[in-house]
Image (cartoon, rainbow, N blue to C red; front, side, top):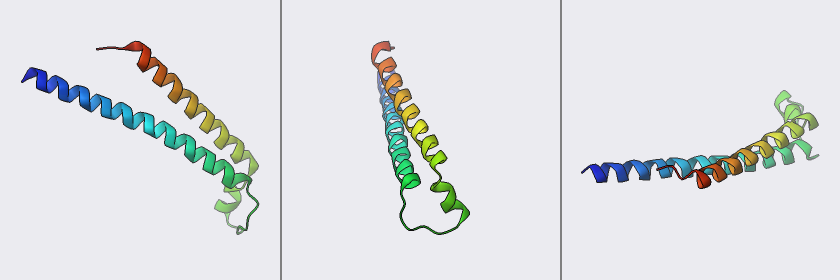
Length: 86
Protein backbone atom coordinates (compact mmCIF):
# COMPACT_ATOMS: atom_id res chain seq x y z
CA UNK A 1 0.00 0.00 0.00
CA UNK A 2 2.87 2.38 0.80
CA UNK A 3 4.42 1.75 -2.63
CA UNK A 4 1.06 2.55 -4.28
CA UNK A 5 0.82 5.88 -2.40
CA UNK A 6 4.39 6.77 -3.35
CA UNK A 7 3.69 5.94 -7.00
CA UNK A 8 0.51 8.01 -6.93
CA UNK A 9 2.38 10.99 -5.44
CA UNK A 10 5.14 10.74 -8.05
CA UNK A 11 2.58 10.59 -10.87
CA UNK A 12 0.85 13.67 -9.41
CA UNK A 13 4.13 15.58 -9.16
CA UNK A 14 4.99 14.58 -12.74
CA UNK A 15 1.62 15.85 -13.99
CA UNK A 16 2.09 19.14 -12.12
CA UNK A 17 5.55 19.57 -13.69
CA UNK A 18 4.06 18.87 -17.13
CA UNK A 19 1.33 21.46 -16.51
CA UNK A 20 3.96 23.92 -15.32
CA UNK A 21 6.03 23.47 -18.48
CA UNK A 22 2.92 23.78 -20.65
CA UNK A 23 2.04 27.08 -18.99
CA UNK A 24 5.52 28.43 -19.78
CA UNK A 25 4.98 27.57 -23.45
CA UNK A 26 1.48 29.10 -23.47
CA UNK A 27 2.81 32.29 -21.85
CA UNK A 28 5.45 32.57 -24.56
CA UNK A 29 2.84 32.08 -27.33
CA UNK A 30 0.59 34.64 -25.66
CA UNK A 31 3.43 37.16 -25.63
CA UNK A 32 4.08 36.57 -29.34
CA UNK A 33 0.39 37.18 -30.10
CA UNK A 34 0.37 40.35 -27.99
CA UNK A 35 3.49 41.66 -29.74
CA UNK A 36 1.85 41.03 -33.12
CA UNK A 37 -1.31 42.83 -31.97
CA UNK A 38 0.69 45.77 -30.62
CA UNK A 39 2.60 46.38 -33.84
CA UNK A 40 -0.18 45.68 -36.34
CA UNK A 41 -1.68 48.62 -38.21
CA UNK A 42 -5.04 47.07 -38.95
CA UNK A 43 -8.42 48.70 -38.40
CA UNK A 44 -8.98 49.57 -34.74
CA UNK A 45 -11.27 51.83 -32.76
CA UNK A 46 -10.43 54.74 -30.49
CA UNK A 47 -11.09 52.94 -27.20
CA UNK A 48 -8.59 53.16 -24.37
CA UNK A 49 -8.01 49.40 -24.40
CA UNK A 50 -7.42 49.38 -28.14
CA UNK A 51 -4.97 52.28 -28.01
CA UNK A 52 -3.19 50.54 -25.11
CA UNK A 53 -2.87 47.25 -27.02
CA UNK A 54 -1.50 48.99 -30.11
CA UNK A 55 1.09 50.99 -28.19
CA UNK A 56 4.66 50.11 -29.30
CA UNK A 57 5.93 50.37 -25.72
CA UNK A 58 3.61 47.55 -24.74
CA UNK A 59 4.87 45.51 -27.70
CA UNK A 60 8.35 45.86 -26.22
CA UNK A 61 7.01 44.86 -22.77
CA UNK A 62 5.25 41.76 -24.19
CA UNK A 63 8.45 40.79 -25.99
CA UNK A 64 10.47 41.04 -22.77
CA UNK A 65 7.87 38.99 -20.88
CA UNK A 66 7.87 36.34 -23.61
CA UNK A 67 11.65 36.06 -23.71
CA UNK A 68 11.87 35.97 -19.89
CA UNK A 69 9.19 33.27 -19.70
CA UNK A 70 10.94 31.14 -22.30
CA UNK A 71 14.31 31.62 -20.56
CA UNK A 72 12.85 30.68 -17.14
CA UNK A 73 11.13 27.64 -18.63
CA UNK A 74 14.32 26.38 -20.27
CA UNK A 75 16.35 27.04 -17.11
CA UNK A 76 13.72 25.23 -15.01
CA UNK A 77 13.71 22.26 -17.41
CA UNK A 78 17.51 21.98 -17.30
CA UNK A 79 17.49 22.21 -13.51
CA UNK A 80 14.94 19.40 -13.14
CA UNK A 81 16.74 17.29 -15.72
CA UNK A 82 20.12 17.64 -13.95
CA UNK A 83 18.82 17.56 -10.36
CA UNK A 84 17.24 14.08 -10.40
CA UNK A 85 15.98 14.33 -6.82
CA UNK A 86 14.17 11.22 -5.65
